[in-house]
Length: 68
Image (cartoon, rainbow, N blue to C red):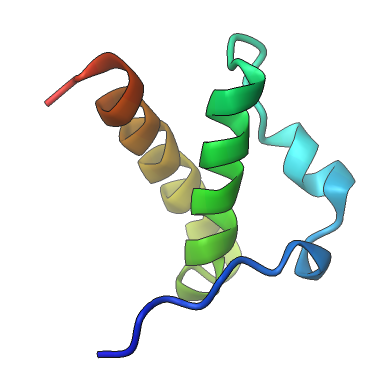
């Protein structure tokens, strides 16, 4: 399996990305979660975006808070 493609920020308007940012996220947390979203976005078309957003929050909780 080839490595995942690098995120393409121009594929999603910045305004759309910013609406997914949580008010309590630091700039660093948001930057990493934003990258996670962009990297996996092609695998979650249409309404599946809600699942991707939930997974991105789960991932940041695991990375930054050590949740298992």
